[in-house]
Image (cartoon, rainbow, N blue to C red; front, side, top):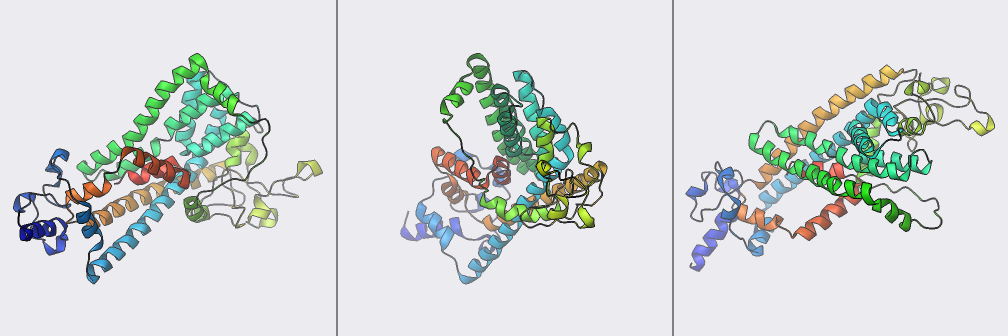
Length: 400
């Protein structure tokens, strides 16, 4: 191939769709390459994708005129905007699920059962409150309070790891408008499900037979354990305060029911704020029973919906004098709103990304995203540690 032909080939691989809008099929290109947005995009098989050079990737990524850089900036801002509200919708979905299923989840976790039942209970509790982090933290509290044995706690945690895969499956349903996209998104979501199911399928019988996890954790336990600080990921710090302005779930209700401190959610109702003032100090601050403080006189009482301790403000769906049914209605409304916002942001995010990739050759996309498996595992591990939620990581990756 001559130098001129090579230059033409590179140009055709990286030319934005706006400059080559008449060409919509790889059959019409001299190189025979498929570009993102082509009519026959789905017809190309992975083994037909050629290998691009890093020079081509760098040129497609960084060589643009002022107008193209402007479009890239606007697209990036749009993607970040919809990504933020996508994460906000996930957080609101989790808070709504905790309000709606918190009482039932707490009752489930309080039972000391056989290994199979413990596995199912952990799965159901996590599916109800849409947060394996919350479930496992409650299980740890139950084990620490000696309400649940370590052996039972292991099976509950295994179940929680299966239940957490429900969220990304819900997210994948947002691609129902396009059959091909739904197929890919559901396949991506299923990877998380199958990984967790296979892990439990292997480790669960081994634990029943040998109790190796119990002995391993016992060997890892230090002689003395001191109090530590709770670490919150940066994504949680950015998203949670905004979601808490709409609805903030009271995790203490789930924990108190699970530990047997109270028998049911009825003990938290009706909601009571001192002097009718709706803020954390007058509604959600706890009574000090050691000095004889009483609810309604020295402190307030909140149910499944609480106020934020850091800001001192109560969320929009908090109501003084609310009953259990009132909180259920608030949780149901927020659940519907979160699902609607989740699907809207998902479709908008996919649309923005597709527009940004329009006209890009599959050779270049494949080269830029084809990282080593071990590196991909390290990246996934780092992101999940950073955001403190495997549900967020897998749900964000599902649209891609």
